[in-house]
Amino acid sequence: MVAPPSSDHFVKLIQGHWLDSIGHSIIVSKGSDEDETLTAVLTPLVDHPDARDRALRIARPSRHDGYWRCGKAHLEFADEDLRRLVWVTEDGRRSVWSRSSEADPAGLEPGRSEDDANGHDVSRNAFPWLLHNVPSEPWLPLDVPRDILYDGARVAALLDIRQMIGPRTEPQERLTHILMDHDLHPMRQGGDYLIPAADSPLWQTLDVSDSMRRSIAQRISRIAHEALSQRVSWSGDAEVWVGRHKISCRTRDIQALDARWVPPPKDERKPLEIARLLALYSVFDNPLSNRRNGVHLGLDPEIRRHCDFELFASPLNAAVSNGRFSSKWPHVEWRFGSIGSYPSVIDYLPVNSVVCINPPFTEAYLADVMARLGELKLRFRLRIAVPILEAPWRKKLHSSLPVPQLLKTYYDATAETPADVLHPTLLWEDPRCPPRPIVGSDGESPLSAKVQYPTAKMGGATLAAMATAATLSSAAGAAVRDQAAAGNGSTSSPPLNPQEWPSLDANKDNSKKLPKASKEMTGSKK
Image 1 (cartoon, one colour):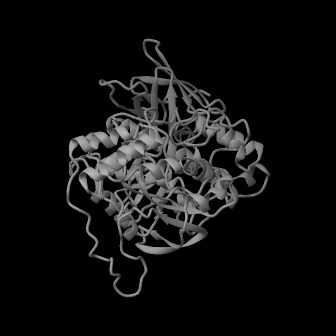
Image 2 (image 1 turned 180 degrees about the horizontal axis):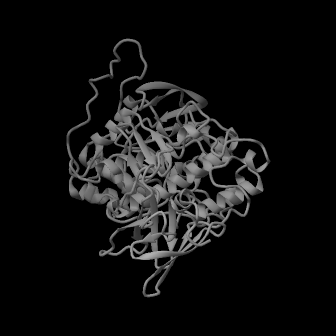
């Protein structure tokens, strides 16, 4: 159609995200309900130093003039079915706008639950209370760092997929497991650090219909096209918005991230980086559960404070200081004290350190940790928690972790309270670990606050010897470990300072540089 006769209809049609034939991502928004004027913000898709947002006004000169104008061009053609607009300038140059995705081949629109495809009268969005439903206001994408926008597009897609799956507990939980295991799973094929590729066999393990699976694949495919359109922002002091989604945030989590911030306190990225990280962790939450997923649970802080390093921690729940824990997303979390991600971070840790290992209770991560257990025990002094599950590695528990304790509770760092363990779980501590207070004892333990680590610091030669040992065979590494420990007499390893952390460029999307990583697991854990 040319110059749609219904002004209201065209205003609704044109709002939202478009891509043009010149290479721009375009976001069209309306200023107010009374005004017909719209604003189109054009952002170059190619990242270069001279890239700038351009804001153009879309309006009709008068109600009697049928032509809509965008900047110096007028609307020549509009096709609602094909979702395509053609603008032409007075000298004949044309710009073709297309929606960021084609029609859904499965007939299931993003944001609709599976019951819709079966003809049931169900709302488009299974969880409307998780959407803010506020009309978008004009904003400039390049005011937000691109790597944050890219993560916003990933998070928005995953939250859309949760809306699509709808009120089905098993697929929602399975999605959490897929996302958690993705970066370690042996079936990994393509994708990025957060989301398996649209054609990854991992999606075949999701118990949904074929039409739903096609819709999920289509939504994943759209991420690249929508990388500059999903705004990450704060709404008030305790709610993060990512595109159309709203994420409620706990005050304690915000305070924890603020306290762990590594760059200068007044860094302008700080609020957005906190919002991004909280949004990333939200993708693991099952909207049907009244419990947060187990990613936020850890061993009792008293146990972890008597360790040199924590694996599978996060800035939200780590009990050790900055430079002493690894986490799932070091490309973001280095700003909050993370030194890397499992398993690559193992090579950075000094030999003979006391290391707390509390892996996700998922198939891929438990199998990987148990396969490395012999090496880890030779290299470090461990405090490790492992669930008792029917798995091929279960027969190793008795011989590998002799005389363990039965763990009864985990610790919810956000609520600052204990949480009951949902699965029988063993806690094993290497006899060579230094003494610590007895957690949960009545009265004062003879080992409580009196436990002190020696204050002697390791010299550069000792650290170099330990770093070398990390690359040797298990036997050779153990020999160097024993020699290094005997040489300095210390039972505590120094933290890694930011200069020693894995190299990540803070100003770029480092997802392609990331080593394999993960973190604590879902509602099925603990």
